[in-house]
Length: 595
Ligand code: PEP
Ligand code: MG
Image 1: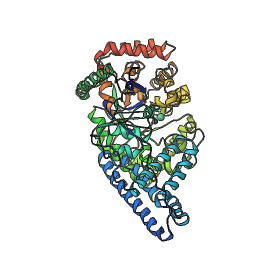
Image 2 (image 1 turned 45 degrees about the vertical axis):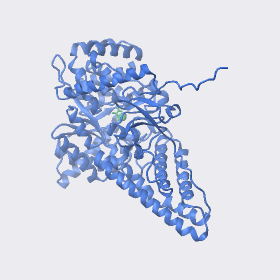
Image 3 (image 1 turned 30 degrees about the vertical axis):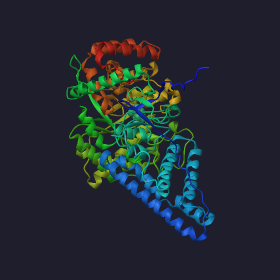
Image 4 (image 1 turned 90 degrees about the vertical axis):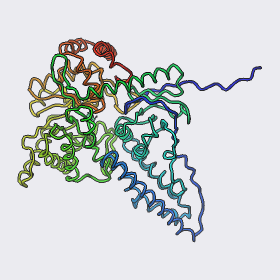
């Protein structure tokens, strides 16, 4: 019988959620779960003090690392992003966590490693048992700190990550925010993870440091081994493990095309955003942190159309004061140097939680006390933010918008509170823009269906399709298992968008669209055809969308919108949109155009 050779493992293609664009090809570095083997040792009474001192030393060193990491992140990504580590630092000093550790050493006579592992495990188990995304994320943060403290105790000064010598693609089940933020872009070319959604901290950080990243890959970790060649396509969300020659060739040429194309696009960034027949379209940027304004401007954006202010809260270990918020908003306006900025009031709740306010989880948080509802239920917090926004409005053109408004009553209440705050500032003699415009995000079907009435009571609409899609189709936008059902090409969603634009036009108020589809080229002609003249999108996509806009004319877009409006399936819509884009801008059509 011939001797059988071990068969080479086959190529595997995994589809995930693209969260940070770009195509990279490199060897895999599979980041295992905390494989740290915790040594178990019973100690003598006389060793108790030594173990307690070891524990204190490890916590001190871990905190020192966190401070360094925070400072480095602050330098590279800005102050808000660095505050992710605030929570870790807070935990490392939290008596409710440290007390039981010390107690366990004293009472049960165990070594510091066991005391640390047990106490952290108790907390992570409690968080995980709650079973929602918010607490899973918190458990992740706790795990991150545990690894760090155990690493110190066990003499692991360098994590495996920082010991890397050649550029790799990180494959992991889930990355913690500090792991991602600590990544050296020269060494880490890309990221693919099993879990995660667009709004997880890891995705936010990956986008901010511009490492191509695909999350929600469902078991990519089981498919790849250390050293396997891997392709991460952060534009379409495809991860290929052990690509065959043909696939490799395809992606290499796509990479070449992509970098040539990016170079051309950089040129486009400087051009005017105008259709072939002379209609000016405004392209604004979506930002989470003030420093991203530089990105918006470098990509040729006209201003900021969506400033997700909740990220100041999400990356902070304490509730940001009025002054901290004011400084962030003012800084944003200063960087914009007279260009417009639309600030969204806190969109907290659901998957976006604060460290201090997440003690009482909801069973169904996406349908719960989130966004404007949360603000109306926490008036003092809301008023603090409105004061900060209004004070900042003295420094540049600012608009305010309320997220997830679903009833007129909510809008009226929010406006009333805003009026109260204006009066307070007036009495205190504090400068603010008295003519500041207030608008709402249209993110739920009820607001879209009642948009005519809403248009009578606010100055502008911004259509948030990310949520509008999820609430119209009843598909969780962060759940990789139903990602195939989540599409902006749904005729039901497009019908609502059309109604909202129509209501705004009739009432003579501004309307823009700031969901992710604003940055997806395939939708550009349709959105213009539906009457939108302002889009707000992820800054890196601005040049591409500008290029598409410069290749089309309004009658063509309107004809397309009419045609697509008669379709009853999202497949039909997508096929038509793809064909039209291919016709108007054949060069722009490539794998990097997200659908
Ligand atoms: C949206 O829902 O479309 C939106 C822009 O808001 P966010 O993605 O922050 O929920
Ligand atoms: Mg939203």
